[in-house]
Image (cartoon, rainbow, N blue to C red; front, side):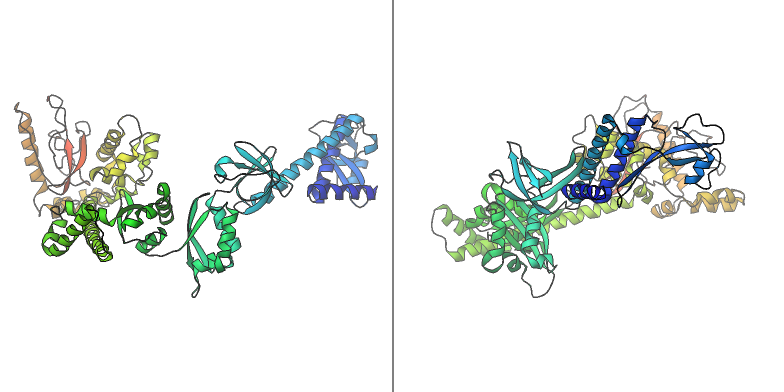
Length: 637
């Protein structure tokens, strides 16, 4: 019996690649299920099976209650004397595990079948878990599989003769054909735990497969002397790899290519003759972009890092290199853009020169007519020769390249100046906004989930408000796919927030001191009024603010009595910390003699940036009796 048990354990463990403890646990569960089925024991009753691997003896213990009376139900009750044989400290009313006089030889046919099914089920579950744990650790690595079957959408592989994996059509190399029982090297893309075992998805088109192949073929990469910075790949056609040396004296490109190209050729054969360009990475974006367009030669690279439209590189190439730089169907330029992270705009030297000559009267090129008159004359002559299909000398091509470089450099400088002006304007508007708004999340606006999700690039309310004031094009792009009028909803939410919740958002340290100051003399009260509005005093050069506000109020009330269609404009620098409503009723004052804010009569306002005055102003509507329904002229509050 001992030899038979050990033989069975070893055979199952070896065949299923499972530890003996897992097989033994499955046998225990099978014995418990078989006993329940044979004896009809309740599922609420605890039953254990204990197996001694050295002797092969199996014993079954069942939970019973200790009683001191006559036993009525032997299946659930046990005497105190017998219970103390298994548990010396057992007391009346306790429950103990008692061995039953039952052996596996007494099991009936149904119980034995149940035990068999439980054993198989437990072993299958353990095998699935073992496979999942094995392959989840290999996720992102290379492995070898044998082709089992193929159809139009997926190829099924057998991995290590134990697990199945699928190679979807989207992860296959275009143009590659597979044969049954063929050995394939694949990249483990994803491993998920399913009811029928681990679901393994492999790939041959993923860019990280090229990364792993380089790590296996190039020792300098695996030991950390050479680093792969970025990879751009179009499987089956062409790939570009940017590498950098982390140790002095090492040529990163030469290490990847190998002697006579032996290393890179092994990878090319593995990837169905896919062309691979290995490029040395450079921290200088201009030099890196120039190399990424290889094998084409580049005349000049001019960067345009726009915060709204993104990073764009304008690349000028010789006319005979234009098609090579773009590549078949734009493939070379597309891969270079993925590799560098810059959007690349390629044009020829002749195209640049012709376009510049057509715009010589437009700034900043208009000054070239006086500063580089001779150069412009020579360029016009070369272009005329080109139009007449005459031969152009290499020196003349160099002259065209010099002219193109001059033009693009001036245009790049102009773009940078314009961008600096925009940044200064944005910073000026930002300075007029309370800093507290840049600590408030966008969720507080109470917008719909769709709009809030679209504004995920804006972290705070202050950024959204700033974008509306400076007409940031990103805001319109984010809300473009939302039905209705999302821009109006955002503006309304901002206006309501500034009207009702601004006082709660802006931290005013002087408010805590007001109740104490009210108990002091009238002279102290006057000083408090001045101290709570330091910014307004500085902006208006110590003008009496209360007097100016009363004059403005009198003017507005007087004009409201007139039925003429004239418009009133009151201009005062805006102060977001103290938004005072000029339409407060008379007599509505606080303890300090200041007019309180009346939320009932407060008019709807919206905030805009006035380019002429350089200030943020608040626009308000007229009274409902007016016939005009549009916004009035800008009224700075």
